[in-house]
Length: 125
Image 1: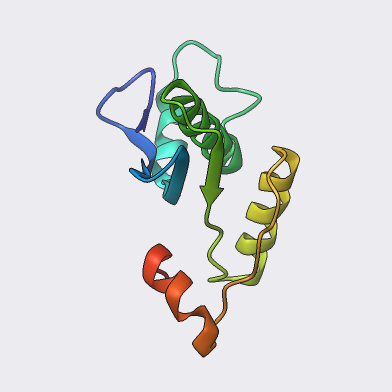
Image 2: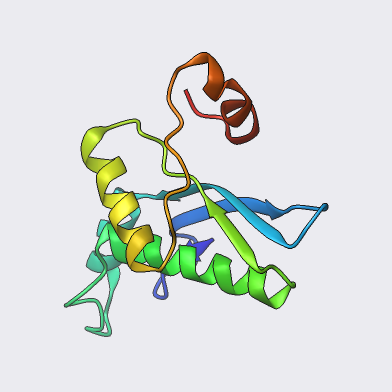
């Protein structure tokens, strides 16, 4: 959970996942950043430290990196992130950011019959 420094009740975003019990794999399936909370944090900031940052993607990337660090601290050597294709723009941006972090696209999971097992594990549409 990411919270505003000036108001700890203001939740900026969160991520969820788990470490697979059968191996050293961190499975991340949910990350959400709340745009209104980010705007509120920017408005409530009295320190002036929120002037040149605080984009929705900055908080999301920070959350993702913290999750990766958590996995590494718990023996994970592999990370699996999901980038649901629920909108052309968002999916492309997520994949681009994940690639910048050094992650690789394993496969595209669509709506076909062969994709059912992946959708059961990951969820999505």
